[in-house]
Length: 134
Image 1 (cartoon, rainbow, N blue to C red):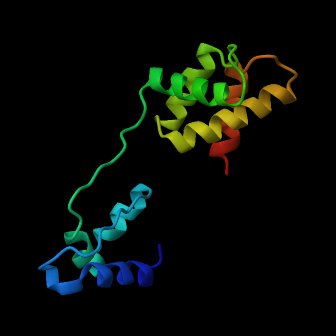
Image 2 (cartoon, rainbow, N blue to C red):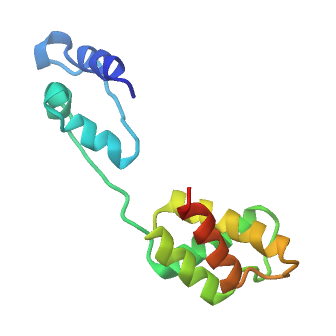
Image 3 (cartoon, rainbow, N blue to C red):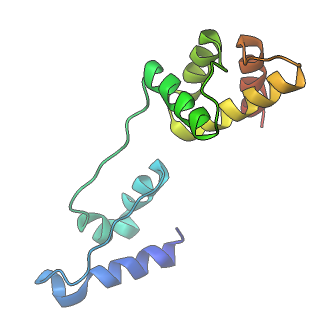
């Protein structure tokens, strides 16, 4: 969010000088949003945040389940990623869902390009190289 947008949110939450709560706001974002709110320029808005929650990274089994769930939504119920590939994707992504998504997609592309029927460690390694080289 731009600085002027955050300032507008602060003004919306400033109604009645904190004597009433006519407006409820849910802010959801990446870790950079939290960092921006902690800047001195946004201290007034940061002080109005009543509840904070940060999604913790996925564990290795959760990463495997997360990928399997997305594959199931896409219509695949069979094993498509080897255990080694899942472990490499988890390690490289540090369990962050967006990074898991990016690496899994790149690993699928690498496996397809290699003519492999399963995403193995080689495809996962290629995905990590592709994503981290940008």
